Image (cartoon, rainbow, N blue to C red; front, side):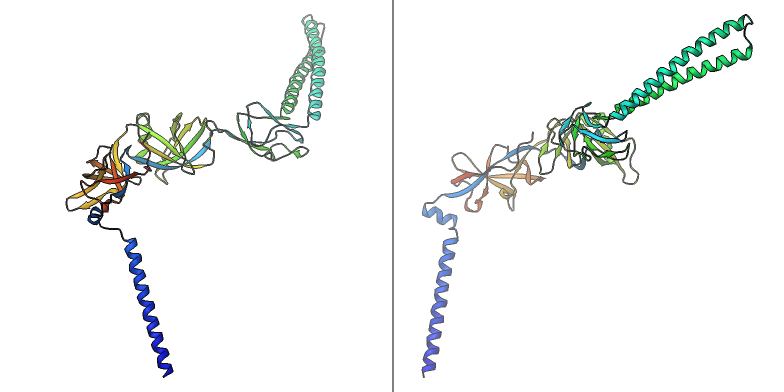
Length: 385
């Protein structure tokens, strides 16, 4: 009998728990379920909705290409003479100007070579003067038959050899001076220099290694390939009707005007594409050589259109419509004719002028002619520039 009583108590307890759970569930549902619009009206409440401004933007057809930012000038600095690095005269990562001295290779030996070449030239010039005088004297004597032909020939040969020795000495001096100049490694153009790959005290050999690299950042080129059917866009006539925009990593927009452009002189037969090069002055230095960017091309003649948030569009048997809200909070149903999508917005061909506020959230609570309490949310498309 005791077991039967315990079982009855458990059944009653479980029943109570189930009924309590059901009651709580109905209570939560009643709290979370919004009241119908009609009931809200009977209760005297005003529906709260979210609205957005209708946007008028340029929806000109666009073409997008993946492109590579290239330096117009870049150079690996290499030594032209051998020796120890005496000085490194730049700050790594800085801008260096054309003609700046960047590295100095030991100069003492090359200064001595210049002095030696100068002495050799002076000696050759002295020998030439003596040989020239002797040759002129032998020519005068030979005219009066006071000197033999063999003596004249020997004198002429000595004279010509002395003349050649002077020319050789001058060339040796020029070579020594060139080597001396190469002990100072200078920037061939203005650009940004990278890491010094060789530091003071290291021995370098001519043309054997890179000392540093300079890259020009202003101007730069943006290089990309287009299908052969699009190459006419980049002739003089086509470029006049194009507007270019560069989308950089991070979706930042580089909107500088193209300074100059050119296309390759032939189409790649393997890919049926043509290479295009756009040059930008890049005053802001935002375009960094080596970066991949997107080139967006559109018509320079704007094609304005009304675009709206797709969430605002509703459909019935008569087609598409939206709810507009005026300054007094009055709702008006607006029939619209739709086109395609522009980015993440719906293009509207007719039905809206571009100065309305339309409901994007809460439209199920309202109907045409109703009064609502509206809050404005920010549009996520900027008006095209």
